[in-house]
Image (cartoon, rainbow, N blue to C red; front, side):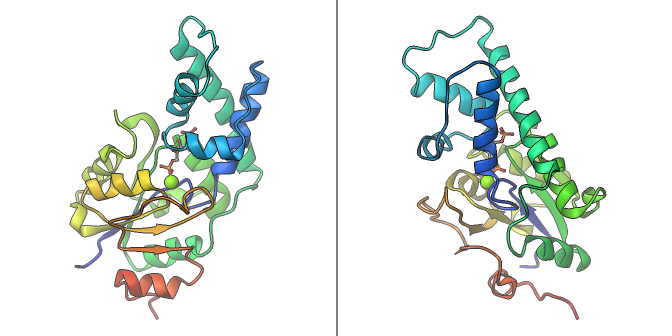
Length: 237
Ligand code: XBP
Ligand code: MG
């Protein structure tokens, strides 16, 4: 199979972001007068649900017993998430979360080789641009033919919706592409869209079930072994 496109997940894959998300959720809770504190073990459980707004609702429904839901609970959650995103994008813009090993080189080398690149993530577009503006420069969008993120699809990962959205945008089939993911939810999403998927693990996803992954890597610091596994004749020259 000739790989026509590589589709990248963001959180946990392009960068190890989840502790940044976790800390800024906590900042938002404090700013909004809530005594909620998501520590690492609790956040590990909450990551079962993708999407920050959905995760807050999951926390309230499954982990809080005596929380008196305010009227217009949906708006309450949206506001909390807006405050969190403000803190998170500031954290990214200050350069606190770098790309993971090998990612910048992979993006540059595959783009230079004429392979189409795309993004498929559950996080918000603001978060994607804040991360990649710092990491790849103000013109980061030049690397990506499609940027599938956030609420543009009705069902978030592990549903395949966001990958189908990206494939349609690219005018490609799942068989033309490979995906890079970090989590069980992400892998289930890309596999359901018929995309051969490689996984790089991190602290939160080390114990996940990666059945169906083409290969699981700790990270992409040894890019040559990733290229070999994926059948990519790179770097060129
Ligand atoms: C990971 C997610 C996101 C982040 C939080 O996305 O599930 O919800 O945890 O970001 P992916 P938001 O791995 O698909 O990149 O608060 O913006 O949702
Ligand atoms: Mg991820």
